[in-house]
Image (cartoon, rainbow, N blue to C red; front, side, top):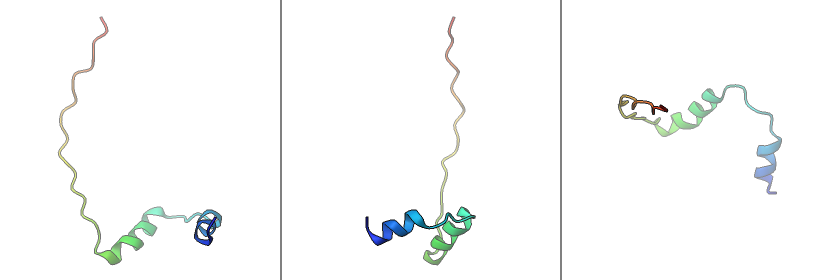
Length: 48
């Protein structure tokens, strides 16, 4: 196991995952996520 792997597995978990991700992404200019529009659900199958 490399030092980096060992550090990752032994380090205490961070409390606010969203803030940690934001801190990593913000210096890069952020990320624009485009979500496709939702389609209506299909009819459920019938078990007659």
